[in-house]
Amino acid sequence: MYRNVIKRVIDWVLSLCAIVVLSPLLAILALCVKFSSPGPVLFCQKRVGKGKTYFQIYKFRSMRTDTPKDMPTHLLENPDAFITPIGRFLRKTSLDELPQLFNIFKGEMSIVGPRPALWNQDDLIAERDKYGANDCVPGLTGYAQIHGRDELPIPKKAALDGYYVQHLSFGLDVKIFFGTIRSVLHHEGIVEGKQP
Image (tube, rainbow, N blue to C red; front, side):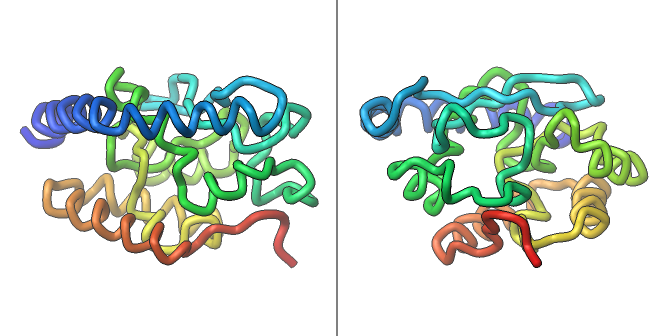
């Protein structure tokens, strides 16, 4: 009941409330992005949703418009060369993710679930298939995000996503939600650029 009905109702209500309450902040951030560098306010990217269908994820644009579009930032040779001045702040605080509230409102994402893979992340998608993690609605945050985020190797990340799918419950969602707040406040697990 929770997995199939209640979770979606909670997502819809909380995303709607967050959009209304945070609308002044969203407007301010949009203006900061618009006037800090040339290009659109929002960055849209093709991601993998439930059942390996595709959707467009929304983020505040934190990088220049000439940045390679379909490559995870932590795999770029020199991401600092592409990040805008306001983008550095947005990424450090995870405020660039706020537009995903609209993805949640539309039902393309959940507040908690496996982070949606890029359409071309074949290795991650294949690993998630082993655990049934591609059959779950992707989330704004997930179990892997509170256990290492970008620092995790793909097999470990997929295994954590699988654990979430197998143990999905209201209690686990609450634990992940508050664990995410702690991780964001401590800037844990964020990696920019290829690692040695």
